[in-house]
Image (tube, rainbow, N blue to C red; front, top):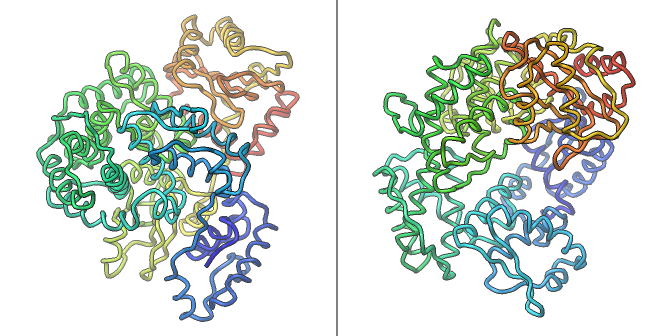
Length: 636
């Protein structure tokens, strides 16, 4: 089956797994409902000879109707014949990156333009993003007249960049030709799967499915690079456990026949570090005692208690989760091994309070250590801290429906999903958490219903599919089962008022805005003179731009004497780092309101989810601003 465009292919895959209404499909594919109907018609025309079609059930949505099971089975077993010519800018960037990362010779844009049926100017425009991506790994492209363009950088950087790129591509489309035809040796990922399982299982090294897949991609990249004459030549690492050392040595013995060349000591050392950086430690606090991990956990929890008044130091579960994660994190930051965090943007938006608390604590700790913790690593820590905050400061609900959670992702993601369910539907009791394989082996389900991150066969109990950061439609399906009533939030009444509302029509800089607002708050006794310097320091660490023109500047810690949210609307926009802020909320929160602080952040998440920036920005006064805000909250 060859689809004329990628959207139709994705629509076909999506509707094979779920029954979805027009509105949900329109949201997922960022198109209108009219386009959805047009695409469904086009799909049905393409599938007319394959024994299936998509039909609309009123009140439920589009579902797959199988009219000829034999022809449908043949269709599903056909190999996808995806076009190997990039058709979009994002696809061209991926193809350009893989060409530069794998080519032994210089490349000319004119040749690539002819091959892909685009203009040289189009590729020249795409090259800006290509260079930006490569610069993250200290890789550069040099242009030589008459020869073309060639990539320069260390072999370790090339492999890391290529593996990260392939991992991202796999998250977007597991059948992308770059994974199976263009970059990696044909069939190598399937070949490596049993080899990795054998080596890791023999030495009892546990990994999440994501960690194992990333390691498999790295091994596939290594096999190609080594076989083409690009070995690692200079890398040493000795401080790993014996089981990791044994697994690496055993795996290399299995990989060597695939390359036809001997593996160097540097290759084995780097493979050891990659295994150690992605293994999952058993959650047993008494058995975890790395000095670096212990000191970092103690520092983070102590800092949060001192500066934010959230006491998480006695939470044994949180301490165990942090220690488990940080033990491998220290290995990664020591050897500059980056792991992708595809949920980073969602984490920032869904856990903004936990993000700020963790960022402040880790940034303070960074003054006393040579390690640099990336935003991706920070995101994983935020998940643990966010779950701990909600476990202790968002309680008091009755939980009745018994639920089985099926999830094959890592420990931090499982905790995040649990916390999100408890926050959204506090009646839920998660009786057990199992993998998809364990679910398939169970003869029956005792719980009331199943929530899963993957499509499952029902076992006489309803199954709801939920992504790690679910869409509103998925949450509504869960809500129908738990029969939860939603309460209208009224945070505006307590934290917002006309006296702390300002519309700025003239140009102003970020520094001038901070100075003006902090001086006003200091004069009325809401903050002291240290507040301004703390706001500036916090902005210097990472931009407080929340998204879509909304910024949330604030201090490091809860320094205010009384809680105030200063609302500033700037129709002309204010330069905020590389972006522009039009709606600014300066947060001055006191320690006495530390529990409500999380509710304040939820308010801003709602503004972002409702895409309310433009309506808020155009408000003429506090009354109209509040009306828009309340309209957003009423939709919760």
